[in-house]
Length: 170
Image (cartoon, rainbow, N blue to C red; front, side, top):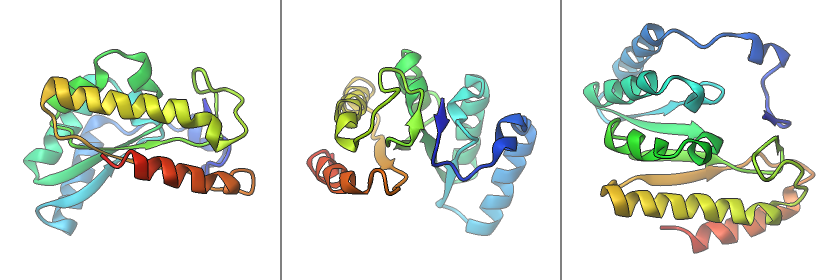
């Protein structure tokens, strides 16, 4: 899985993730800077590749520190691991998620060689349905955002994604 529009260099995939203790220390520094109700983006290349117990510990620590975590993901782990989003919401208290979807990403299950943003609409629909189902089944108030990298190759598709987003603003 690779994002061809990624700003990270070749060394990014060779750097091991920070140990959990170091991540928790970062959260404390962020809390010192932002104060209560500060927003924090939880990302790590692809944060959902971390062991689930570590990810849950990060989310719980955010809540203990009165931080508002937003999980930043490409979302494929949510598609491949049944119940992952539910557990993040119920056990980790996740209430905000951002799912990155665009044609610059290569290797996504079922969408390996798309060339138009319009071709990703079924994927966006899949995530919207997943979020609605998780809200309904868990009572979670999870809110979602979507991000995309805009390049010359997909600039024409931005309007389509904006229209899709407006139709799925719930």
